[in-house]
Image 1 (cartoon, rainbow, N blue to C red):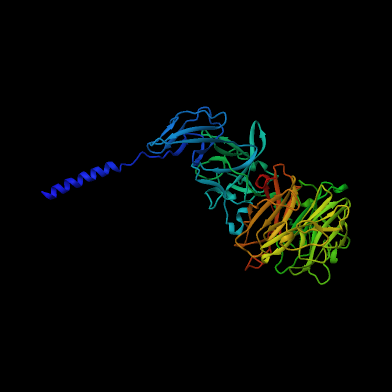
Image 2: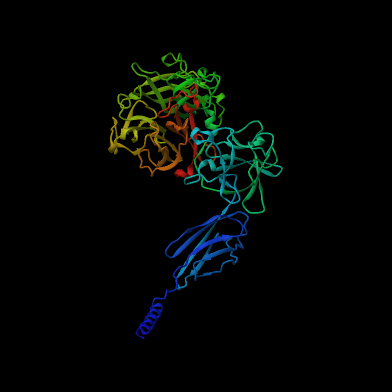
Amino acid sequence: MNRIFLLVVALLVLASCSKEYKMPPSPERLIKSFTLANGQYGNAQMIIQENESILKIQVFEGLDLKAVVPHIVISDGAVISPASDQPIDVSQNHQYTYTVTSASGLVMEWKVEFEVLSIGEYGTYLITDEQQTHYLSVLGDTLYNKKYDDGALVSALPRGTGTPVPRYQKWHLIKQRAVGGVSYFHIRNLHSGKLLTAMGDKPEGDNALVQWSAMDDEADRQLWKLEEASELGHYTLVNKYFSAAVGNTASQRWVIAPTSSDTYRDDAVVQFFNRNGSEQGSVAFDQGNSIPLSWGPNNGKVLWVTQDAWDGTSLRENNKFPCGYFFSYGNSMLLQPALNDWNNVHTPNVTIPNGANDRPRQVCTIQANNTFAWPGVGVEIGNKVYVHCGEGSGLSATDQSLYVFTQNAGTVWETERTTPAGLSGQTDIVYASGMVKAADGYVYAFGSEAVGFGYETYLHVARFRQEDPQQWSFFDGTSWTSNPVKGAASKIADGLGTLSISYLNGKYILLTMDQGFNCDAKRNIYMATADSPTGPFTERKLVYTINEYFYGQYARYYTPAIHPQFDNGRNELLVTYCLNYSACGLSECQGGGIDPYYYRIKGIRVPYELIGL
């Protein structure tokens, strides 16, 4: 009897506890999903805040914004106003505010922002299958640079690793012309800078869809019509040459959506430096500074300055140099006939009478007991071109000088080596990082001081009046003095392994990149800007990662340069860097020769908006 009584009491206690600890109404007031039946790209992006949260929705152009019908899933027990599946009008400001009330009575406002995606005359896009799981991609072994090749296959691949989407899966759409009322586009890959191309005799062939440099002949193979499907944002890419879709993918329908602008490889610039004619003079070299000219008959031309250079007569039939063969001259210069002329056949060497050191195409003299004379940055003043030259032996600097070249209408120029006080006679600060001819009547010369075993640098600045290039003064951190002052107190900025400085749109531009000669895994290029030649500079921003290899190993790279005069009309800054023909643990001689690809300038374009220009 007692056991029965205790059991009844226990049950009553449990019942009492159950009532006492009943869960209160839920305070949750989330929008868990927000989807449209048609016209939406990707999933909603959610930003949760204390009093008002935000949903960002991307929709394709053509969606009726006066009658958007979203299906909304919210927290259990909550109520949303207006209700799910009710049409809303967002045509005015592309926004709408929902109110979600939790079961407990708490309220949260959700602002839904609609971004309308459209295809313009020029922009960066992701091209995916209709399920948005596979991206139009350039194929090939990255460790052997195959994604840069003409003829590399293009197909659909899952998204590459990392954030953001890899450049070999990003594309530019570039409107070319309309034919019979139909607009055609070039489709350019950001990784390679090459164009989507239809090759072969049959559009459905396994190797029909590839990338290729811009073609003069059979240009229709690189023209594409975006044929709209019934579903918004879905297209068939119709090639003009075949009047058909190209490739052997299961579906020829693609979703095309804009994405953020990004740095890309400029294939026209890369091809400009692929000089393979025995009569072309300098065909492979490092450095690659450019100096725009405005004097007399050279107005509109560009002087390119190189360091160690190979002559075209050294190329064998396979367009490689023989193993064991050293470069032909210690420096050289090229004269590009116009800013937009990227045909390298049109660009000859500039020489001096008899050649420096009796080398016909060398323009700066290697001094006694030295092994190099490396010219680089410079400016034009009147009919003179002033070029900084680093001098030394092995990889060690012994001095620096200022060469003065006198222009004429031809390609044989007179030159003089000068040694301005403060510049010459010291190598603590080497003023090879940049020269800017400013509106205040000065030329500002930027120099680097190596610290941190070559992985860090201090940036310094000197200047001279344009009418007196031999009289230099040096910024010591607060004022201008007659001698350079090394150390942290006089620096105007910090850099990594190498530095380059230029000027555009009222801004001094600083480029610095990771030490590239020791084959480290960090291979980034960063940029910053300043309003004054003495700084301060903005925080560095990553703009590019060098992704080139030497037969499976990290390729060595160095000598970056900024070229602001090459305006392509799209607000994109030309930057170059060079590869060195070896890698850590690998000889330059591979496959019975030295490949000049690894001793040539590579060009990239950085959108102004990335760095605030």
